Image 1 (cartoon, one colour):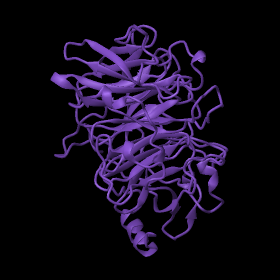
Image 2: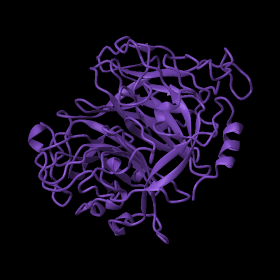
Image 3: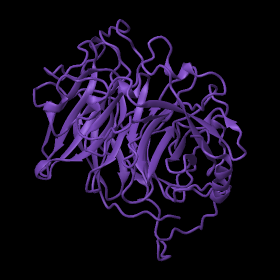
Image 4: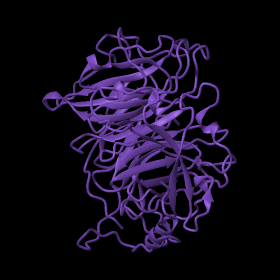
Length: 476
């Protein structure tokens, strides 16, 4: 059913100039502590709920004498896994190219992390592919997959394979029932790039039950395309997915479960390949005008209504899903990457836009409100003119909602890369800087108790645990 245009116009008016519908993260400017002054009126001093001034962020970053991770004073980090250095329980080295990650409560006070390894193409290309553990292999020709990392309170670490023989495991998402959905960011069919099976699917990995991961099968109902991230609406059961692709730009998808289907452990494996409905968005502005690409939004607080259009051939045997729609049928965006469910909706990242998009930018974060069926622009980064200089942020990728307010964002920029935060009203602040190399940060996620921030340096593949004097950030 289409969203009523008149009702949507009322919602847009109520949202006001730059006022977010969700009351969560507001605006994000490019430079640390900068304000999107054209969009918001923000007081010069930060204040808590009682009006008491508090400093923003955690202070300047201190260069790391070990040359790995710069952090604010009082913070420390620990290396959890390191490709080619640490080893799995079975003796092989930790695989390389760490990407999307989530945390789970483990037994006896431990923390489980499921860690994607973004390894594309045949195994021979990679020094440290995911080992082909018996029973956990989808395609023996593929190098990627996931490992499960168990971190004990005393600091000891164990790691084992969760799934192997998948390709280009980029982001993914945590399910409400405590499993991980790993996403293949590829469209390779059997016979291409050395693959012996079709790829471009979503797979479920259970960190608590290795037996549940045996004989892995893709969730074909979610479609075959260059998957990036996935979140699940715990109330309605809808699944939202992002596609990182160009020529044409990719799509933001919704999967609607079939009548009577109930999510839970092992339930996705019961779905028929064509179960439910896979849909793509068609957005319109407050005047009811169709919007072809999300880069058209140039003001924080822009609100678009969303209709959903069914995908015809979700397995894309001959025509990629994003190419099955003609001009005027759907709304696209460049580099749709990380997502996180929070505040009753989905935060969705468009990492950057250039010549392949109507308007250039260096990052957007949208909030999809499933109740109102609206997308609201929460974050907009202008093009970073000097990415080689420290102090500016660009290229948001993986994101998480912080237990201390706002978002924490992993940067995949052109130059120096950071982990950075954003307050609910839009001021930004640095949390960490990659002092090792120019690799992106990935897999940003907090421990279940909120005391540790985990993140990865993708290349060569290092998982880091960051601790320190975390505190609630001011909203303004």
